[in-house]
Image (cartoon, rainbow, N blue to C red):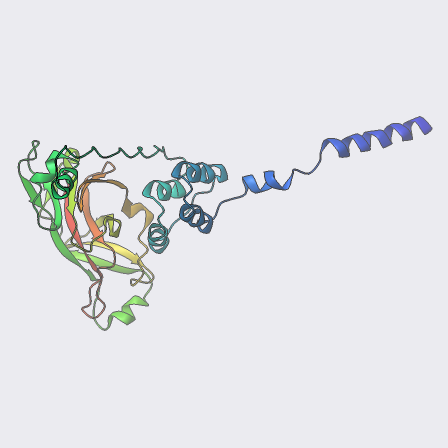
Length: 284
């Protein structure tokens, strides 16, 4: 009997010693990351790769609202990090290392040297019309460009003041007409955005529209003044700078339907509009 008690005591002692609590550092390493931490790491100059690794280790996917995305962008968080926040399983490619500028030719004065550095990053940049707007290539060679129409998004049932409309749950905006005038093939959806003087590429969001008999609609969420678009309506795209204030936009594969490159912050409550955007359609 005594030997059995002694054996039981050693078994308990061994079990307690073999299953110690993990150190505080290991607990911290696996806890979920927050948006505030992502912003803090970004402002501290931590590399994009480290932040992405930290998000993926936490394994948490964020259902980001429009306001949260804008706040992240204002804080310097890159598009790549925002995409990983929404879906940690997405593929990630580290940003290319910056290439040092070529030295100015011998004998060149400062204005000449600046002109040499100001050359477009892509030869096609010089063919895009100089006026601000959104363009698409008419031909494969990029010799001719068409321009998307800038349309106004009007609130559905816009009678009365906009302030009352903003309080209504599920505010919907619409574009007049069943389809856009510009129709593109799926293989030709590359767009070129030439920004105005105070424009920012981060102000654009690509949305799929619901087609009705005589118009196309999009939900702005409970408060149209701070739109939260349906996740299935938001389409991803990459934006590549190819010249000063000129970007090449490559959307993810788009199915047949109606779309708008919506300009965030373009609404005007006094005029009774929810915003503006560049419309186009995709046809098979």
